[in-house]
Image 1: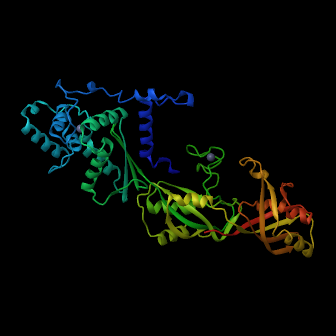
Image 2: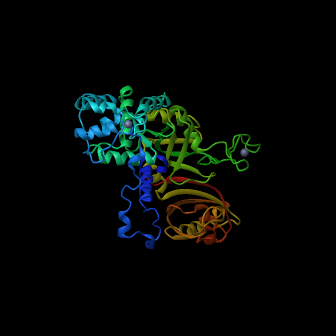
Image 3: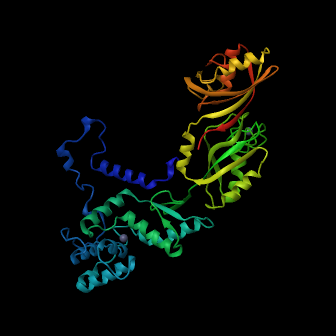
Length: 475
Ligand SMILES: [Zn+2]
Ligand SMILES: [Zn+2]
């Protein structure tokens, strides 16, 4: 989740606020001119609340009664028909029991003080909660069922309540409830938490970064449980050419349906990827549904990545297990395709590391080999190529990537050039350069788009044979 889906609570609060403003007449503020004047601001005071909104069995209601915990306040909320749960939570009174039982205690006390009160029955629909608290057990049970077999420690609850209910509850509670009594939404969340803890006392409820995100829609009583991903940081070596870093959908069928002829039903353009060679064993071990792969940059399909490897974060989605010995995971990955991809330095990390790894720009070392159209003396080649060490290249966006990158000119520094080898019409050398240098273009010049280039300094056409990343100087 970018943090896409992890904060339904925050979003909901914003929505609620928006709604309040909209109802109060603030919602139309689009330009400074449209802003209401001082006087216009006074109008909205609880205008949407009207005392006849709820059922009160015809009892005459004293709108001026003092708030709870005053006995008259408690008598008043009993008269308007609140349920025992709400009676308890807005009463401001300590009782032996809590919840429904605590409310029943208070009701009995009130009846003893004033026998007239026993004529006020509990409404069929509680004006404060619309009988939500009756569903707590059922909701807790469904959360537990949907998480059967899933390992987790922390949980966050997101409760969606109808705005009109939140508003009318807030109005009644603010006027008649005890000062500081808990609003409906957090009371309801707390009730579900307490119910869950009866059966699973080890769960810890958190405000962010939960293992499990639960959302409850009180209108439909729909319960959604979202198992948040886990993340593993590591470095990978790609020992062969021809493997893309991430899964590529087939160009013909775009990976839809059951694939097509050209991808032999796999839906993939390349049957293997670094992502799946690493991710498949992890998926298996943790019982996950899928992975996402986040590399610190990527090499081309035909480029190897050697040395200590390229940093990456593997995001593991919907894992049934969240903890596992990393040395065992590493061993499993490294025995999957040991001739092709290997990993090292695995550690558990968090979502924050995804952006850190993706945004890190570090120098890299490469070795490149190419062919020239016209042989050159070793001495001349070494002298010309070595002279590129320390220079700053100007690189226009290469033709091969121009379909997905905006055209612009980059300046990139070549830090060092070494190990220049000349063998007939083939030349090879190693270099270290700034992040984002187009290395193949540094050699063949991309029809002059990169300047200077090896091709321009040796005055020959160059065709790149292969390229290896020798080291990524990061982390
Ligand atoms: Zn209630
Ligand atoms: Zn296909």
